[in-house]
Image (cartoon, rainbow, N blue to C red; front, side, top):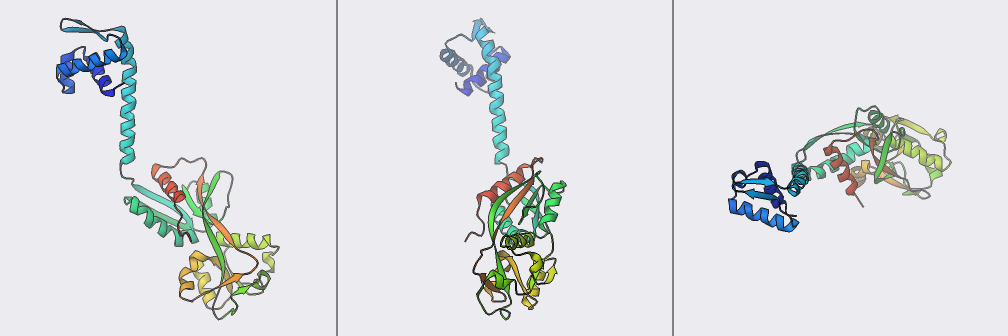
Amino acid sequence: MDLHHLKIFVSVYKNKSFSKASEQLYLTQPTISDHIKSLEEELECKLFDRLGRTIIPTKEADFLYSHAILILEKVDLLKESFTQFKKEVSGELIVGASTIPGTYLMPIIISDFKKKYPSVTFKIIIGDSKEIVDKISNHELLVGIVGAKVGNSNLSFVPFMDDELIVVASPDMIREDKITLRELIEFPLIFREIGSGTRKEVEDILESKGISTEKLKISGIFGSTDAVKQAVKNGLGISILSKLSVLDELKFGILKEIAISDIQMKRKFYLVTHNKRSLPLVYNIFLDYIKAHHFLSE
């Protein structure tokens, strides 16, 4: 059924006049008559009784009108929805991120995202994984990106990217390019603070191999990845860090990667949201964008 026919029919029905419908729709009366005639032929019924200059809707017209106005309203709503959908996405995204994704991954994601949605602005709150998860649990943040699953059942953790953890050392500290896990724990180790996603993942990996953190020779604990890197550069010990965080140092030979012959250390980055919170449109677009793209893929 032609929507244009329905629109003309509704106007004629409301005005009880072909001439008034003609004025309202900016169409000639013969055009109005032709559309109504076509509709009557399609439905195989009479819609208006013509008594001189007066027209009277039939029972079929009453029935059709009750459905036609609903159909036309739904079409208008659909058009409005698409108009909103096509409007430029804008607004501020406040995202919590743990140190590694916040410092080394988010700038890449934001730069890529803004090429498609230039009117969106970002505010990135950086803390350790536990701090970010706690903020989402307490409804201080809507979305987080972390390197470890910590929290309660009210939170959703969706993995979206793999991260590699590697052993790094000053080039002068270890001559070998590859050692065993047992040889690793004989060296002084530099750790991030408790609450760090990197530290939690390292501890979980070591404990899965039967190595308790109590057996480790920890020579220093630092509250940031940059501080850990500086300590390693100055020979305080070796460390296990995200490869993302040391790409430049490895490229220029400031730090050296030491392969572990009997273990490969991997973890995932997670998108964290609260199960009971509804996200604004711009947040959903951002999350869908991240899930659909593979950033820094090898």
